[in-house]
Amino acid sequence: MTKNYDAIVIGAGQNGLTCACYLARAGLSVLVLEQYSAIGGMTISEELTLPGFQSDVHASGYQLANISPVPAELDLAGHGVELIEPERVYAHAFPDGRAIVVERDLDRTIAALAPWSRRDAAACRRLFELFGQEKANLVNSMFSAPPSFAATAQTLASTPGGMARERFSLQSVRSWANETFETEAVRSLFGAFGLFVGSAPDDAGGAEIAWLFGALLQQTGNNLVRGGMHQVSRALARVLGKHGGEIRTSAAVDRILVDNNRGTGVRIATGEEIGARQIVVSCADPNQLVNRFLGAEVVGKEIADAMASYEWGDASMAMYVALDRPVEFAGGNELRQAAHVHLSPPSIGAMAEAMNQCRAGDLPNAPLIVAWNESTIDSSRAPEGKALMKFVVLGTPWKISGDATGKISSRDWDCAKEPYAAHLLELIERDYLPGLRRQILKCVVHSPVDMNRKLSSAVKGTISHGAMPPYQKGSMRPVPGLGQYRTPVTNVYLGDSGCHPGAGVSMAPGHNAAKAILSDLKLG
Image (cartoon, rainbow, N blue to C red; front, top):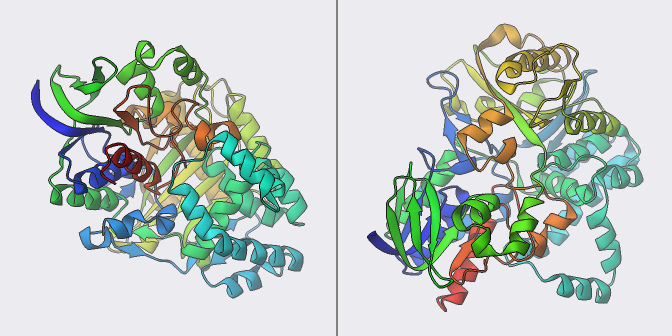
């Protein structure tokens, strides 16, 4: 066995690096092992199209991180994270050329919504302001271990309005949007956010997520990181190095070594074994922890069976597009100034239809597409005079069994991805970005299969380490028995987005895992 460390962290994404930073800051010797050739996980940025065009491969917005204590506690700004804060935080464009633009200025946002519906504008003001009132409680719940099911039930029963809150947490987007808004356009504005974490309009639990993201961005911003999201992981790596921690890339862990129900180290793919004197933390996806790193014989049949039934959610696809110049939206110049723009028909029903097609295995005809204005917001992402955009397609099948476009015969992603991307780019140009295809210098398409090939944690082309229905949240996330960042092995922990509070660049799972570890070690 080679050099020993106090702690070994598996995975150099935002959560693995965050956890490692807190452990190293507490005085532990820490090694982070990353399977990929670079650090960052879901926060990597690369020149995917042409030299000088820096694309965020997965995560693009610095959103939940705006309410996270981690950036301040670890001084990420002092270690290279520079935020760009667009005044127009997001928008929703419709095929008829109209659009809704949400700004940081609440009064301007409400004034823009009023022509659609004064009632809906007033409802939006209440929802945005409600986030401000709930922010402290939300931060506390996200950056703490989830309460047990019994404790949650007791709190709900004893708190005024508790059962109404529980109802809201279980509502579908369609149910909530129909009772809250009168226009399909505003329903769609919020409903799109449910799809960010795989909650289709009729899925239980989607309403709360849709409100949370829509209101959070208006209240705290939809910031981009200058130079790309990889600056977040680079800053975390600098903090880790400052406290003596080490990182090794291209070092895939095959197994966590266990002796007498205690993790003693890890074995990597080369056969090298590295010792861990105190703890091992998995910040890869929970399936790898259960079935690759530990195995059913270690975690036990109950956890192994639960993991076999774990729901990963709907896959995504991305198109990274280098342009010879910025493209004008049909809905106006304001849309270019928004961090991202939802592209869809103004209908919850249309979103539901596209998700139904996806879940039936069909390539959706008109899925929700999120257009990221990467170089318009951050000019450093593209050469002078050029432009860079990313189009994320939310809700594509992992395995293709049919085609709702009527154009694509192949059922293999490697053959289908380019013609499907051509269909989507034609749709985008026709309805939202006139002239788009004439301005493309190069388009690189990542199908769900490509995403999984690139990063093993993008399981089945998903980006959230597991879907987020009510039965995969809180202490149920990822599965019962693993919901408090601890495993059946006394000194083996987990801290990935498969843990509470789930997906998004919040650094919360890594932060919370570190708190649990330091508490167990009586160091925090």
